[in-house]
Length: 219
Image (cartoon, rainbow, N blue to C red; front, side, top):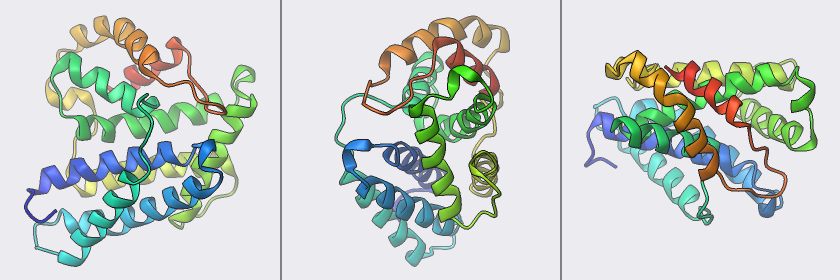
C-alpha cells in the first residue's frame, strides 16, 4: 500500500468500498458476508483518508491492506454487481479509471435507491433486503439515522464526503467528457451494464431505465 501514490490508494479504497457494498447483499454468505462487509466499510471510512494523506501513515496503510485481504478472500463470483458493472461499462466507453468511476457511481446508485423506495414496483423482497443491507452499513459506521431510507440517504452523503476527503472527482463531467457524447452513449451503456450484471438469488436487478437514470445522475 505504501508504494502507491495518493490517487492510486484512493482509487483502490473506493473499489474496495464498492466490493464491500456488494458483499453485504450476498445471501449465499448466510450472514458472514454481512459482518465482513461491515468490518471492511468501518476500516475504509476510518482509515482511508489517513492512508491517502501522503504523510506515510503506516497504521492506516496496514488497515487498508487488511480491508483488501478481507474482501479479496470472499470475491468469488464471475458476474458483476450493479456498481461494478456500471463503472466497468463507463470506464471502457470513455477510457476512465475504474476506482474513480466507482467513487462517482456508488453515491449515485444509493441516491437512486432512496428515490426508488417510494415506488410500488421497487418494493419487492429483493429491494427491501437491499435497503436493509445498506442501512446496516450506515449504522455500522455510526451514522445517526431514523429509519432505513434515511440511513441510505446519509450513507450516500457519507460516501460523497469520503470521496472529497481523498481527492477523487465528484462527477464524470470532471473528466472533461463531452456531455452530448455521454448522453448519446447512455442508452447503449445501460444495456451493456444490465447484461453484465449477475443474477443471484435475492439480489435486486434494476431495469435498463433505472440504469440510464443512474448514469445520467453520475454525469
